[in-house]
Length: 250
Image (cartoon, rainbow, N blue to C red; front, side, top):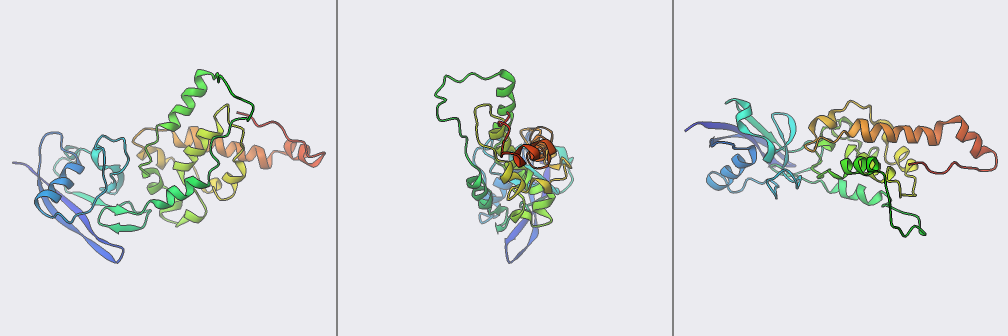
């Protein structure tokens, strides 16, 4: 029987190492299958996070051969018999083995003003199909946080105090571009959201399992909104004379 060699990180925040495991290959086997085999047959103490095994819960994110991936969606046969290295997501504090503490993301989510329609707008709501399609793309996010892991601001510069990361640019875009939302989040994007730290390398798009166009459809339009709000000379004149403001656009 053909076997795959996996080098899996074992350890916690105090330190650790890569340990080799030999796993028998079966047709269609994915990395998560191999991790489960190791747990069942070699070492039950190996810790990993998973839930649906259908690429919809976002729980089983890890770095496979250096790239953030969902283990349940990464087939072993694509590596053509070469050794496979599995490490935890590097942008978040390590708990144990392949499990990291992603709670910071949920704290960020609580800082974002929720969907807020006009008080007197009781419906029925009618929206153009293109508006629905645009918002539906952002709703596809499964919160695997692979985009957060690959973002250089969060991963290499410890930027969690300065930048929300691409996942929450998607979250804010879904709210800002809703034609029935009435709240402007430009101040949040410019401030704690730190959208100016993104230099649009599109690395987040490359790892998104839902193929959301994070940079083109979320981050760049949000950057434009912030620029319009704070750096547009015409709007500055409106604010300077009489405090007039243009109505919030969609």
